[in-house]
Image (cartoon, rainbow, N blue to C red):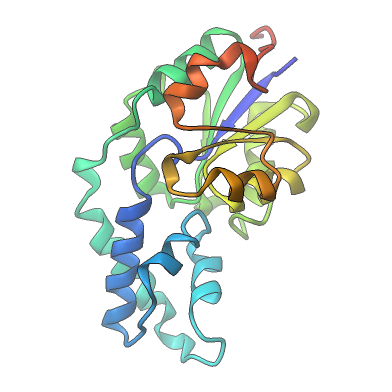
Length: 224
């Protein structure tokens, strides 16, 4: 039985990963850092607390870190009104909800950005809870965010599934004791996600919805 389905948002439900890569690239350049966009893309899914340490030299002047984050946030915010969900994303949330699973968003975004993502999804009727990086001490691939989402869902890890699009989602879910189903819509390859430990990999949210009964999300519990 699956009592809760936890969803990453960026790259999983909403088409944002490449926007993040481009705006981080611009933010880094403003402060003298040259980081290839392909390298940045592979770090999307981490919260900014992990992303800067992952991408920038360890001996950098860290006094600029907050300014780099602010620059990225300002650049990315220009896209908030134009964000688009992937085909089938809202329908997937609604079908999981209809079948009785608690639906919880577990995003590495801060609260204002998460609100913009929810507006783009336009599926609040199917979302029971949502967590953001603003509420935890460490973001993905640390398990803090996923564990908080589990707590909000009121479900044990053994009766929950995480849905994401990156290796960082798979690692966070594994540390929290649950399987991760992945979609390719964030730009990671099937082999990369499978090797990271994904329980199943689908092309996009629509493909997962179409195979819901054959996926690890099958077997929704009854809604209390």
